[in-house]
Image 1 (cartoon, rainbow, N blue to C red):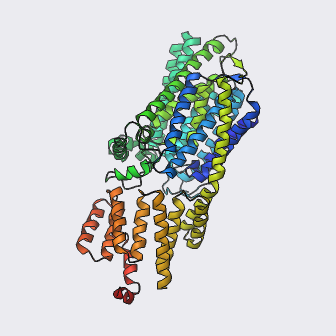
Image 2: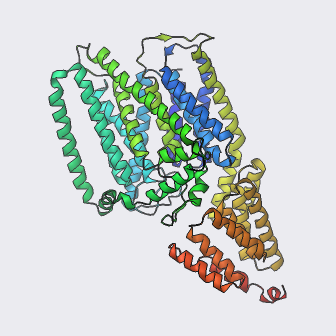
Image 3: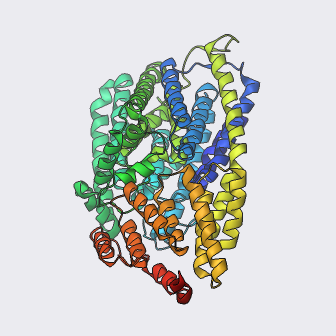
Length: 622
């Protein structure tokens, strides 16, 4: 017990960081399986004595998790909600294992050490990316960002900053307040500096500001702790911290301005009002107005963000660039209030525990006033402050790897391991019900993963094959994925797009027509599962154009435009369709609309010309 559950939890937190943060469900499910296995195995230790978690923290956690599970159950597009459902299960498992079983500081320090080791790897990869190896990634993953902005093993610098700024505070707490050996503390201090170097290389403006804010919180709490056990040193402590903070900030700021790219990122902070996030937030508020109390449902920002997008945003607004706003839009005021209660209960318990540890341990020691529990609790409290600040402008809690990390940190605050009442729960007690519930949740999660994983794996293979232009292989893998999981719309899209691309390259008229018809069938099957998806609608329109079914194609394009009226690409594609049907005046209007939205108006024209020029004699007969 002292080894197995912490080891599985550590493996979960490390593995998901290595798999691009689990941003595709197929890469997060193995990590969820590890922590679910740990939960199932905990059945052998349900009577194990332990420190009771804070009741308010447990209640707020269970209420929030229950509401998320209910929202996933009634979501308008079930597949889009599936990611939130599995992530909520994984987060709750990590949290409950931490609060119910992993009480001792030794186990928690070993888990923290593993997280810091991952941070070092992140920074090593980031240094290569920043120095010009823009596409470098570990484990064969492909990095879409071709700039020098570092993302480590994750896919975005913002998420890297969210991870590193959090584990840096744990390392800082170990450096200053732990009872570890001097060599260990020096190593932790070095890793702290490395993590903040990674934050700098990430280019995340939100990461810069939240790092400063959380360091101020860490310093303020440290002064508060000193106030309790060494009040006469308060002035010297404040002066020392302020001086050190100013020196570090000025030195770091000066060095950062020496690099043109980082200097540009810093300068952009002063122009926050011009950031595209503002337009994304406005779209999210429009989504919120549709159902203020309960929200529009998990995953729905994917299509409501498109529906309400402002013309200034032409990239796909998958997330709102703000955890608070996206939570408000998808889960409503109820979800936001439950999340607020969750934050308040855990922060208040963490701060109360800091005071208790200080009074009980630091004030009554004859040796160096240090405590491992204090170091971890202080680091976790400051890390949560970093999350709270960063979540204003980014969506770290929608990245599974960072969500699991913070589940562990909130678990440290929900049960700091310093209580006096250590006892074995009786069979009729709430504590036993919670432990048994943890086992049942683990079983349910493992069952769900076993049921869904094969379909997700085959879907990913279909996507990769399509990206590599291996169309026959993509069709085959997509067909297998549909057989395994017909409720997933993605393999229908990959299958349809593979058929369509084969049709465009086919010279035999009969085979070309058959391939287009196959593509149409696949896209329409996918739309039954996700009728709001513009990608399906546009590709369906193009496949219908290829099959010379222009009236049906026109409806598909217009439906796509209704769901995303400010997307320039859609106007370009529709203009190409109008070119096919000879509607020159309308074509000019849509080409101009695409141009005004900053999109190349000729996108889609090459394909339209290919359809027009194929077998002109047979086309005339039609």
